[in-house]
Image (cartoon, rainbow, N blue to C red):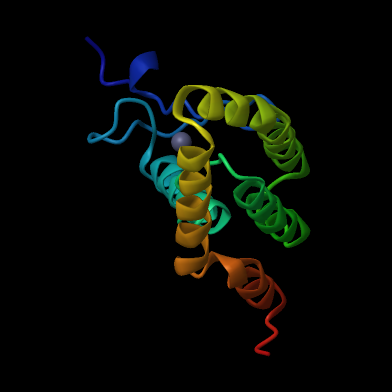
Length: 150
Ligand SMILES: [Zn+2]
């Protein structure tokens, strides 16, 4: 046994240009050095914050209003460089799929539970969306992004 670090003791972070980090792995982490562990934690925290801003209190995407609201927030996040264009495009595509599936969701719900139950579901979802303050959420995010206090 030598005193040299073994290959598995090295940080496994690989930079965008393909170079592997030369630092030793953190003792408390299975694959990263302390610096890259901190970077990973910061990225995860930011991703969680972005997800919270994007989704707010939206619990279901069964209404066009909820999907539209998420799209509005997505626009603001992409415009403010909080989400990459690539990721924004993926999320917008998922929203498009959600919107295009809404008529079938409604059809199934009406068929199995009736119009009144579907209307109740929609009213409850919209009430929840508005009660959460989500109706002004896009404006709030826009203010945060631009620094506009009005
Ligand atoms: Zn590293």
